[in-house]
Amino acid sequence: MSDLLGRLRGRGWRMTSQRRVVAEVLDGDHVHLTADEVHLRAAERLPEISRATVYNTLGELVALGEVLEVSTVGRAKRYDPNARNPHQHLVCSGCGTVRDVHPVGNAIGDLPEEERFGFAVGSVEITYRGLCPGCA
Image 1: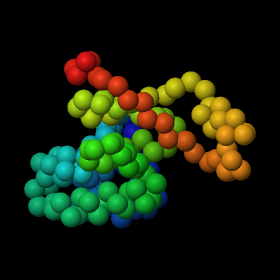
Image 2: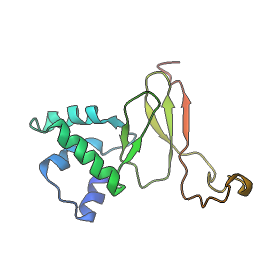
Image 3: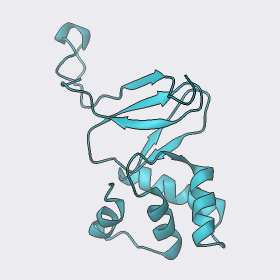
């Protein structure tokens, strides 16, 4: 389970009712919602929340490094609250489902020195693509 709410409280992030609802919607395992999905779920809990507030809050969470923005080719961006635990993503090419995966090994260490071209590599993003059981 993601600990997004706890992390935000620990940072002293001003927890308005709108921000709290967005964070609650995002909090959990394997949660990769689009901004529109976040808005729909947030509006179920707080009907007066606007789409602009959701987008602004998501932007703040990404800027804080508390939520990852996951881009999938040809689809809306998704938001991942699992920003503190190293992982990669598995994306269904059919329906766009995104899952967190934890491959074995060290992706940075596995990149040979001659393939780094002098870069000081600090992070890696790997996306595995395929068809989920429902689309296969």
